[in-house]
Image (cartoon, rainbow, N blue to C red; front, top):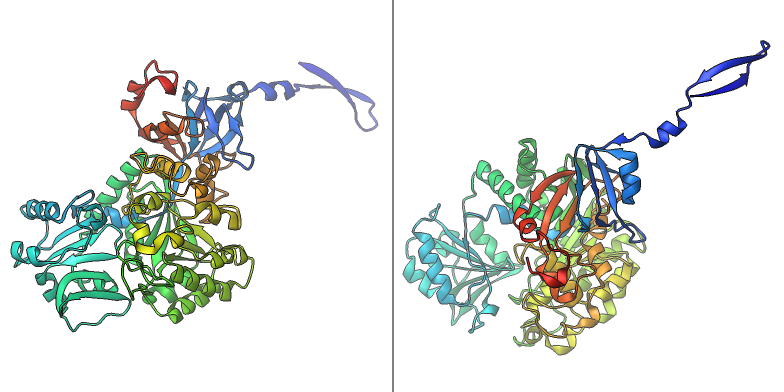
Length: 570
């Protein structure tokens, strides 16, 4: 107790007894819901600082600093000693198809098939217990087969003469349908489609449909029930949390799907933070553009995802010059330039983003020029080009000139590197998948996976970005290593820059006071671990809003007594 004296009015000196709480306040411990300490916390703040401890209250980070400071000033019933483990901001996937992948759960998985014959066998087995009359498979890739040409529908017609079959390619830009499905869609050899291709050989349908041609069939395939869709959202969310994802950008969803995501959140099934981009549907323009950007709970509507062209693997990417492996073929735009310009004009008068898929150098140039006409110089609108895969050297500077943000997926480079040169030749390949060059345009670069086109795992994104190798550690010296990202750049791309790409950098993406307590604990420190150990990194725990949403107990048990990454493989 301290006594001080103060002079007050005319009465002279009056003794006033005051309990000076300064020293007590300095040492009193504030309550926290969670304290983690004895950790290596990568804050991913502006200076890329690390810390030892962190306190969380009401879903927000309230303190970050040394272990002694945090434990001195904060108390909690939930204090975790992480024994030196590395902690990172929750990973953010800046481009994926969460709801689409979830609602594909009823379909036959064709990922990893090595031949057309293997696909036929899988579909035969699937047909025995398929939940619908339609037999739907997805994620085949002829580039992984010994014979790398598109198949035809002849054997599908023989196996399934009375059931419609529809098999979508891994990139979602090509499919093969049997005759029954083509008949239901009314497709004949005379059918024309703009922004797509109905393949014919000697005047006969092969069943191959590219880009907009696919829509002719897909509109006839029944949707699953809303209840089942919501259940699938929950199941896929669990998988995403297991990989350390706490937020994602769901690209190109329908207005109905957006409503289902909201419903799943209301039912407390969906807890993932989702930044949603609506599909390019004119019917939604007036209502949704009028609404503008808004957030409800963990779900934000932020703009539109637009397709300018198709994919390189299916030769639908729009190129300035012919494909190297297909004479007189340059691919195509999926809509007239006027369509993209009209939408850009509409969005320019709103607070929404325009995020446009562009693979080929012609498509990238077209969209960059349209953006430039509307944005007219430097800005902070953060309009994006998704993929920015093949960009002519003369167009690269347009990203900086108009502040256009390239949003890229590093595993595309390591998946495509086996066959990309055959599509576009060596010269064009040198300025394709050029992530370091793209990063330099604006000084930041959001990263994603494009799952289910690629795998969900963000660690593979990180590895592909820094090592430029695939999961088999090929090639030995990395693919076009001059465009690799540093480890700090890659981590920023998966966290704070991904948040920035959605105008969410003040709430997410780094471990700083006032931000959401979204973080992940990893088995290895991916910033320091030897390169050949990066892919051996697993998630121990994932936290969203300070709540543990994934507990990798099997990895924790495997690491019991383990102290150094060089001595053990969990």
